[in-house]
Length: 306
Image (cartoon, rainbow, N blue to C red; front, side, top):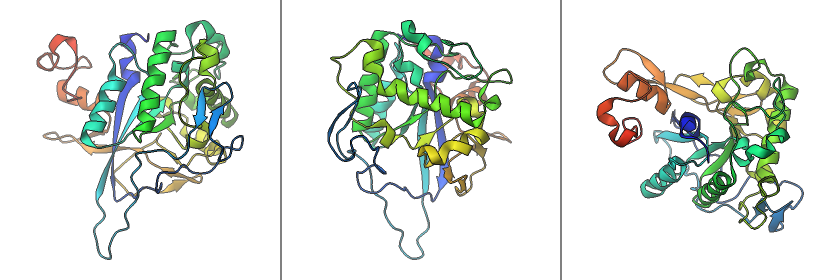
């Protein structure tokens, strides 16, 4: 399974505070059709994914009354969405169910690709088979698929965090062209749509959604390369992107997709703001990436998560 050292990627939660952002998805349905199946129920391709109808558990929008002040919405999202020995995916999915909230899981496609099939991944500006967050093994893929399946049935969204999580000036996402982002996205979709074949798990239960139909939101690794990704996002069917940094302002559209950036929020008792991620909260609260000793019983960081 995925090593615990990757927890920062698997369990990076981002919290966007959006004042008055109304949900765009009504009823229980997805947006548009993927073409191959249309509205026909059934498995797709090798059976890694299926179209099972409208997604359960989605809340419908409520129109504001004249003069009614828009509420503040708190949007929770997770980067990576792989299940490892720490079982953070399962833990926070259950937290969501208990609290009656749904979230977005931005899935890294390589978490559905086994290590022995690493050569199937051809990342932009890196050698084939390279990933800065590694790959997975059979048991890890089974666990990740189990949580993805349950998350979607709970009403959560499955977005994309792309694949190899390359950052920085040497081959990172900021250096990629629109065509390279298109290649990265095509591969992320392929790993989700073909995990049964790639992992040798033909009898495992299918994911209950058509990923081509469901995939409408993205966050680039390290929030890099956004401009060139946005150049292709709308034509690839995306309705929003969450790869930017902004103040707490009303969302707007950029290049035809909604800008749902991570936002800067005040730090209580301090004279500055920080990016709305659990990592930033922990650093500013504890002063260390390892967490304050008083908050880490049995070695598990709790300050930023409980």
